[in-house]
Image (cartoon, rainbow, N blue to C red; front, side):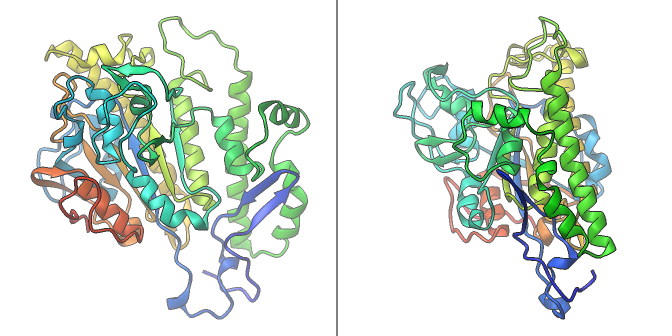
Length: 447
């Protein structure tokens, strides 16, 4: 890194009318003459990616433990990043089980996964489960960023009504919970996410006002052009390149959103069109993943959740040759054809996730990249979808967490180890000191 004589504050923004764009980490943010040992460390980011309706575990679990394990089947798209992967087998989410409450495994799986708590069975307003792990961390680290956390998803979200065997839709649609009675539904519309990240700090602006502003501007970057030009002339060559690449990334996301909004193509009636835009599931997922990369790169937030589909999702995947609705198909009764199609869906989700990992690894951050500075947990609260089992869950962690996670291996836990033990360890890596969380029995050694 180049140590400059004049430095920029880390929490600097490019500002325009109703716009504030955070900057990536620059050499110019390092105080002049700072000793190398005192240089500011890039923050660690934490993300959770949740997939619905379980996973075909025979095609998920690596055959061997330890290092040099093979990532075949569902995990094959992540093989290029095996050195940045920690696969954890044997974890359970006991709170996803009935525990005397009867049916409703999908609602319990989603709501209990990050909260490590058993949801109260109700269809009314008296919902109650627990604070989720992402929100425990967000409360601690979120004071240093514009957004304490960001919740994204590929389905529209309802928090009222009946969704699963006597459970409120709030449980099915939300994995993040601000309090035991306050779900944080994921945002599916990329435009809304983009404006939340880079638009006015005032989030009370109504839709009509946003639409009127959109008609009078081509880009958020246009509104910060003067400040951008004033900044760039003060930077060294390396920082100019970083700023150019960062702003190009924002422009590209804007273009994708604008193109999607103008897209009037006809979606095949048999295809479950994603709520929000774009109309194609893979494009929608990529756009939301790209927004997470930008949010991390500009340090607008350090905590995110991404829901690839609500539990019980009936989305179809014609684009990969699976026209059957996901949830009915997940009750496969061990039929080879159904299992093969479920495996295709599971693999498709991992392929999209692998693109996100590639973007993180390709994005410089401090003396490394965003993947080095992140820990991203991928998984869900159901293993065998046919029997709705909540034991031996599909769980992996990507990224080094600034040296806090030992990746490049496959480990197996003792029987009935709560998944909450992993969350407790992840909290520790984010600087949150807790002795317990939910039904945890201790921290799981991940480093």
